[in-house]
Image 1 (cartoon, one colour):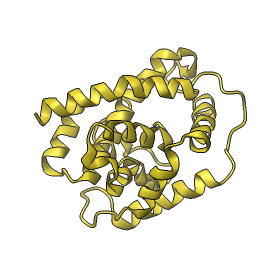
Image 2: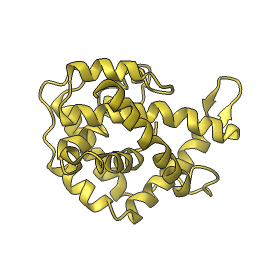
Image 3: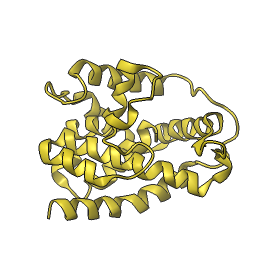
Image 4: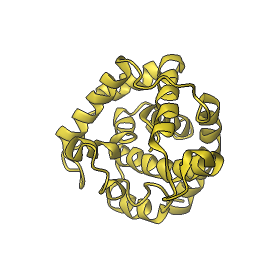
Length: 204
């Protein structure tokens, strides 16, 4: 549920400790790819948890582990990092900003949430010194032809939609109240060590 710049910057930070992934284009494509399910299902999110390996909204690292046991190319590592990021991201935002949560159903209020994350993602796109290199790698990535959940065409289309999204105007303009750049930076600082622990636990 984090937007693509959060996923890409977190993937980049994690990869600084894993040089085999740092300059690998397919790793970054994997890091945005669980959301490529929107190419097939558009605004229908009913199967989002399936494509996020059980981590859409809460953490289930054992499901990412099971995926990695069968699929462990650089693309797949990025895919699992994305899934885990969302598993931690949603509870973090709900815990830290309870006024963004609808108490009737314990979900984030879309109008409040997407206003903040959209503007923050556009700011990260505009200001991050890492972004030009990440996007150059992303453009060079070759989608896998045999992914178990998504087709190569869906993965390519989703990547192209991300390029178009950030080249256009931000869809929101109300003042950012909570999820700002500083919050994203703190989240990345917290999560990267957790990802290290998960990788060491499953792949010593």
